[in-house]
Length: 111
Image (tube, rainbow, N blue to C red; front, side, top):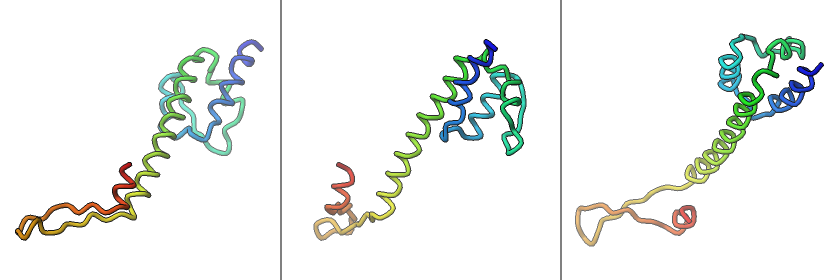
């Protein structure tokens, strides 16, 4: 019963949408147990992992997953912004040397 009281909050944490396959693999390595995350995975399977013995490690994995999700969202935002911008080059002062021409949209994106 004591183990269950400790494990249930971890179950809620592990249910976070930021959890990816790499985080479940890390959890398997931490607990030393293997499992398959599919529709047949049950609460009993989760309790067999003895998460109550790995409270700090589980919390760190979930925290890591949440931080990585934040980074993924920021990278996606940057990617989407730059996908619509084009760098243009123009001749520099009547020479054959090409110089980068920065328009207002790029300057705004950089700011």
